[in-house]
Image 1 (cartoon, helix red, strand yellow):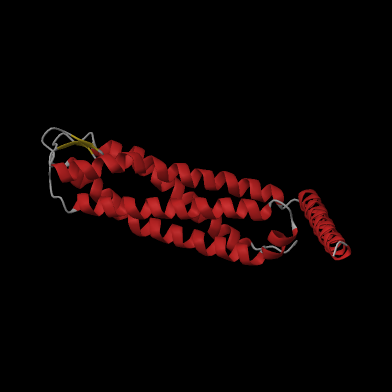
Image 2 (cartoon, rainbow, N blue to C red; image 1 turned 90 degrees about the vertical axis):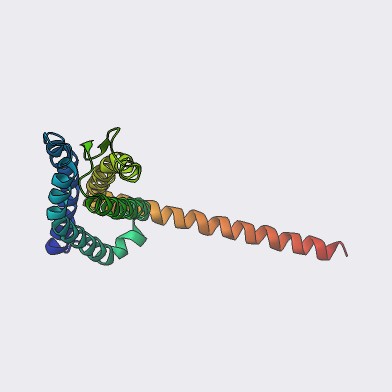
Length: 209
């Protein structure tokens, strides 16, 4: 329980920080700067070039985070089983991670479609205008929502990770293990009671024959 896993935690935390920070900076910085380009036909190519530069770094950050998360899960598996509340938070964290991965992947797919669209006139990276082709405008409207979903999900992951870090404090570990032991004892007592009632019913049924 007290062993250090500095490398795994560093990969987990640095990867998640880059994932969150990069997505937020891209939505505000890259897309915001592209919207300031005076030529409406160059706004989309400018943003696409910026996102294309970031994509390999983002992929490396996500890979590092996932490797660290899986490594931590493996090393902390005894605590997941023994400490009350840890399994629940691990499930929440897994759900958020899957959601963030799905949104990131789909956002990149939409970004690639916009990158291949050429130089259509737009008001911004995620804002079409009346001259924007319909298929391009559709991708932009989807990205307008998704660009904020990624930092929201990864930000939630940071909060859950902080909470799970609190669960690793000795006092929390001890209390969680007591709660889990108490829950198991209650379950066993309940099962014994059900078994006793079933046996009593069988005896009554035999006596009534």
